[in-house]
Amino acid sequence: MTVSSFLAVVVGSYLVIVALAWSFQAKLVFYPSSRLTATPADIGLTYEEVKLTTSDGVGIHGWFIPGPKRAGSPAALFFHGNAGNISNRLEMIRIIHDLGLACLIIDYRGYGRSGGTPSEQGLYRDSRAAWSWLVEKRGCKPKEVVVWGRSLGGAVAAGLAAETSPGALIVESCFTSMPDLGQKVYPFLPARYISRFRFPAEEYLQRADSPILVVHSRDDEVVPVAFGRRLFEAAPEPKQFLEISGGHNEGFIVSEEKYIEGLRRFLSARLGQDIIS
Image 1: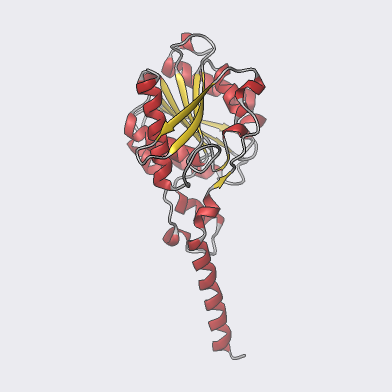
Image 2: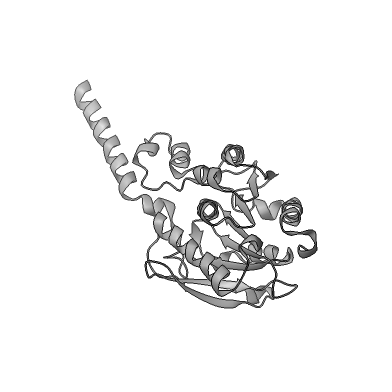
């Protein structure tokens, strides 16, 4: 084989890899599971099944868990990461409840019992439907709602907060944008140029006018802590940064004491000491 033929094979193979990466991006971004394996009742919490309809007619499923103190408790609107479904988030639901907050958690389209197929714009529509249900149907005051997201959910939460001005915004273990993360994970690909998903969390944070808490683990092996630092730098005041330890999916458990104390300080300052346990 001549040098030119060898180079042609290498270039051709690389272009095939790039084309496959472009074509199958959705499978690299979204890892939904349809089977619910548990409910809040399994950790001793009462809950309400919630069914929403988005602006494009997709049915969304979620749970509403009342706060422990009173019907008018401030509420967390929680958006999970890109894998599994809400039944894998019972530990997070428990933490939110123990902080004295009610909680609305939803499954994005294509996840759990929600209809449809995941997409970037679809997830944003899902978040808006959840906000509308919590504020308009449940009667929660916008300034007593904490919009809260982890990993991919951090970008969804930031996008919603930029539109709605909630009482507070919490972004955990999140990237600056999907192209930035793709370039980090796949340095051999032109990820910034072929990415079909943006999820520009950094841009959304710059437009948010709510108090912001950025949480990130220094040990995060999926989204390096440098991304969290960049998000914090981009965010307007008032803002706080909470550094924890542990891996991407279990840092909040590994660092539970520090994590909960940091959350409690932030929420008490923003929502009032008397309503956070």
